[in-house]
Image 1 (tube, protein in one colour):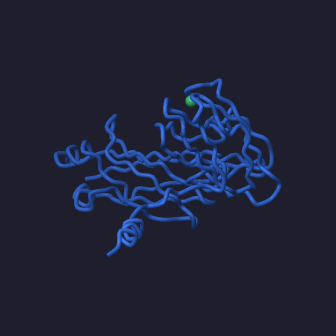
Image 2 (tube, protein in one colour):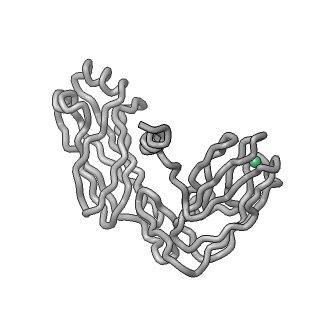
Image 3 (tube, helix red, strand yellow):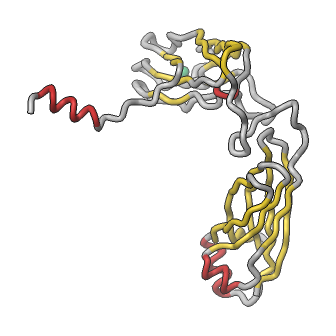
Length: 236
Ligand SMILES: [Cu+2]
């Protein structure tokens, strides 16, 4: 095999970095963005590249959304590294200033054109939507009634209901002890799920004759409207 062929073979195993539709670069001049203006269409992605050999940097939106989260941001990365700028796919047409959270004097502007379509929010990636201000109508139930069943399945089986697609963050407690945890998305009105026992949960259930289990759910829809639901059941 020639050296070139060997390189080509090696190249096949060399994972190409997942680059976005546009790039924001910091450096090589220390503590500056080379990219002070960047333009994408709605729904497109951006990669942040730190080409400053002297410092760590990131991209952080000046503005926050209704949920208190930045509109977009990247991880803070070492010299020579790249990171996706998260959540830019949800942005609508407009100009969005950004800065480096480590060096707030580093500033730039992201321009989003009127072309393309922003990615739709989902319960897993929620975001405010002025057209949907109604929280999900959600309820939960505990299906297990026997401690032996929960130990056998290593989890508590539950039923989740919602009138719209929603994410359920579930915690099962007994007194102050957290016995089981899990997060699930309901897309079709109702589903069953099994929330995994914590170490504490296993210990407690192995020795208990009966446990008053309280299941609490924090629920959000795609527009990040929030609701809560709960259920209790005595396990024997
Ligand atoms: Cu910086």
